[in-house]
Image 1 (tube, rainbow, N blue to C red):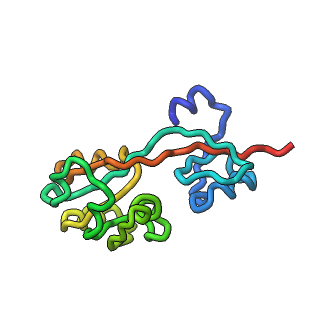
Image 2: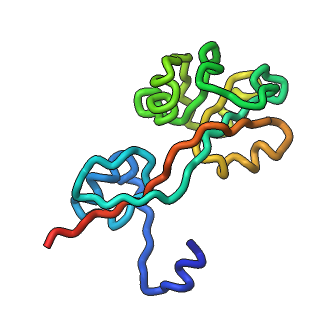
Length: 162
């Protein structure tokens, strides 16, 4: 973003955290000009273009049984307690990866990163998007990770009606 701002100083970039729960409505109503989303876009008034794929990061204590596996599948989590930031009803990981595979593990919502870290040290499993965010934590040597599932990330913008 820094490079973009340098080459386009006339553009005012603001991040609207309040629009996070329903960015498509915010686009259609004109409160946003652009949104980066992971869910499929079904509103015909919105133009969507793929930006990248995001990897699912599985953060584990190094001696956890799953840490020895070279690849992880949704079924590997069936008997685990999984940590996520959002409740399972709102969790893309749960709704779009685990549930379609018929896997319904215990999901524990934890909204504090430091608490997540301590729970992983105790043997629980942390699932998160995107991969880049957790590289620093994993490189600390306290944890290991396996990133093997992907989801598309889409840029969307509201189409202006004439």
